[in-house]
Length: 91
Image 1 (cartoon, rainbow, N blue to C red):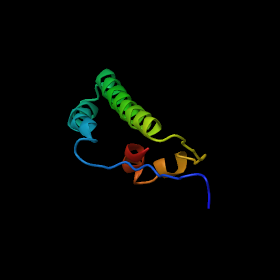
Image 2 (image 1 turned 90 degrees about the vertical axis):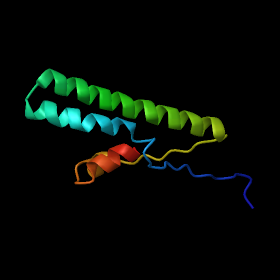
Image 3 (image 1 turned 180 degrees about the vertical axis):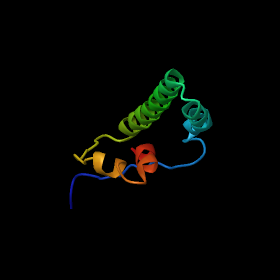
């Protein structure tokens, strides 16, 4: 019997975790009007919100578990598929 206890983290996907989706309509409108500065701003907001959610969830995971092990998985290949938005959301 091992002296270590393994746990796995999970991220649930519900409406509270997808609060940045409200910017999709604004982004689509800005892209149609070809307003480059507004598109850049909206993309930056979406990226910052994703980073914030990932930081908060990883921080709570580290606080809850005594040890966390990570694997080196390439994230670039799934991002280039049609499921890119879902892959980036799950990060």
